[in-house]
Length: 69
Image 1 (cartoon, rainbow, N blue to C red):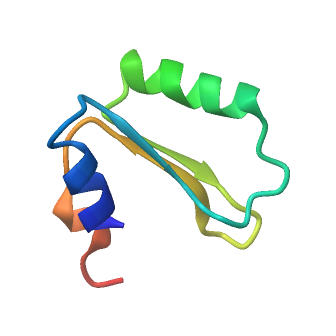
Image 2 (tube, rainbow, N blue to C red):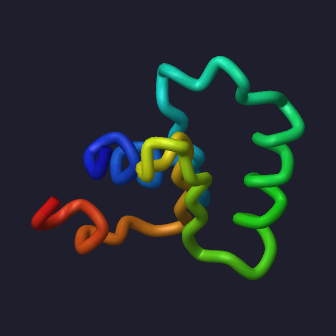
Image 3 (cartoon, one colour):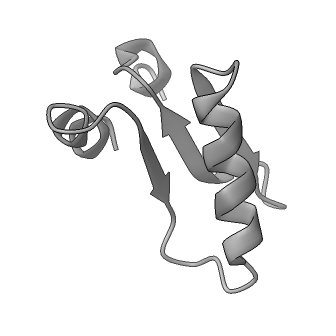
């Protein structure tokens, strides 16, 4: 995840990374996440029922988020 986000941020100002197993994810969810990321948030997470997350958005790489997992 860190590599994918860091690589995208070389070309774009922000990125949303979504999981591949999110059958209930709707376009409105992506729009809300994107709006928050473009607003006051540097990082956003959308929590999953399994206590993980199905979406992460960032404006800059934050290596600490993916260390010691």
